[in-house]
Image (cartoon, rainbow, N blue to C red; front, side, top):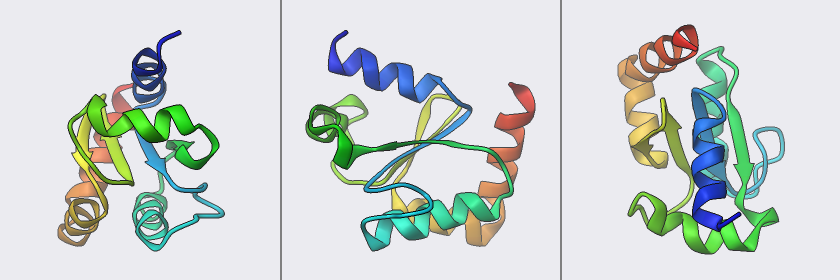
Length: 106
């Protein structure tokens, strides 16, 4: 399977997915840690992909949605953004609404 197909499959595998450095329980960078913490605080189940475990995904994810940095958060198959946008949405209460709506639809 082509790497972009694998990325697409991961994006569509869960209503909420974070591509991050490390895992939600053991993040490997501060930005990934804060973004995962915001998702955890939403009290929803979410998927994750540790980009450090797959060099092909690490190299190609930036061109999948034309977003150059990690982490990347997808809700209902759409890129929401990275760390800054995720934290901003969380602080406004919008991330909670978005994630709950996505999880409840599935």
